[in-house]
Image (cartoon, rainbow, N blue to C red; front, top):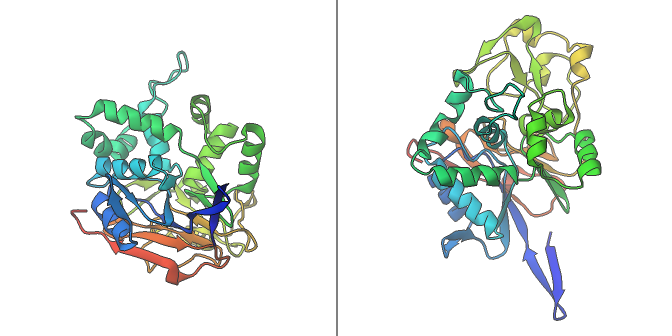
Length: 331
């Protein structure tokens, strides 16, 4: 598939012959460099670029990893130079809200509570920017301007979940794929349209565990919800619906999905355009989740893989189009 640019002087100029979609980096800057070089990107005048291809990053560049600041500079330089695009991940959204004071009189010191769990999530990022406060403020402003979804001829990109109803409503009301500061403020009210929109696109569909139960994940967080898929065959029980590394408690996994919870779901059908997502911490061999859905988050920061998909306009995705680099503890 060739993406064609404007006609200058009678000649058709090909801007991009294909896209390389890269999953959640989480501060693994050295691994990102290895992956880019494996795909024949070269550093020219300080910016990684390819002669004919372009990167789309799936968000979650920040938090957890050893080289967050370096990763952000690589990504932003590529985006600013026209060699990449990026969608906002939940960790960029979390950073914005964690660092933004509440509106006067709303009772919030910050939009995101500074409790132990939230502080733990962003701790590595803030530590690595401790001596670069102005730079961090500039990145926060950059995060806010990131698109929430990208639509290209022949495929779509979002960090966690493509909810066509919400996206269509947003495009109808706002006519763009980015949000402004007021929309960010409004989003902390989770039942508002802004809250539902940002939560769904950056976090997906979290389903509550039955009977108020909780579970502790492998990364040490105690949660009362689990991540779910939104593609493929209709699920009957929670085991078929769950999509995360940690298994559900067996008694909950076997339960039939309640009608109340089923109403919360959305579905990405097999006839939709190919879709690329991150977010879900996969740990098996990279392959499409469905003929038209690919996840690129292969747990890089947990010493898994930093993965990319080399998209050339195909309608049916193939495991042969994945490229990845294994992550070691220094990358």
